[in-house]
Length: 103
Image 1 (cartoon, rainbow, N blue to C red):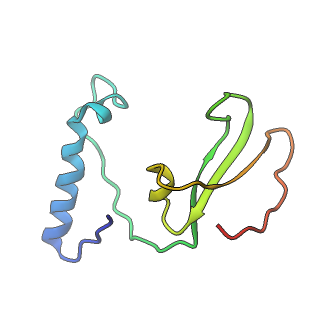
Image 2 (image 1 turned 120 degrees about the horizontal axis):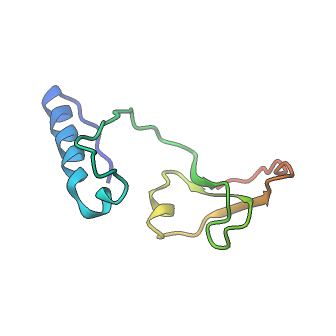
Image 3 (image 1 turned 120 degrees about the vertical axis):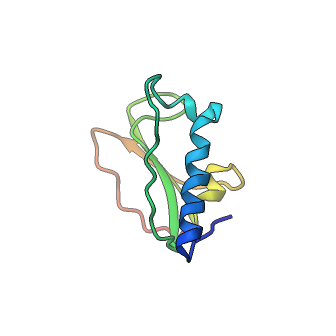
């Protein structure tokens, strides 16, 4: 679920929610031991035609291969594993062929 704050109080609340996640075990794994705060970036929500994830190494094999996975609309269904993605891959020494594909 995505939510766009519309008042200054809602923005402050949203920032506090994000910052409180900094102490969660999953988040701490990405932080250095000396990290004491977490910056928060606020961006407007967009409604994309397609969204996805790009890897510079194959996430399964580790091979030097560009892998792009995309789905229609927001990428939440992709990263949560709810849906299968359109996949484009290629060797990093070659250009990926242009693909015209509706996610």
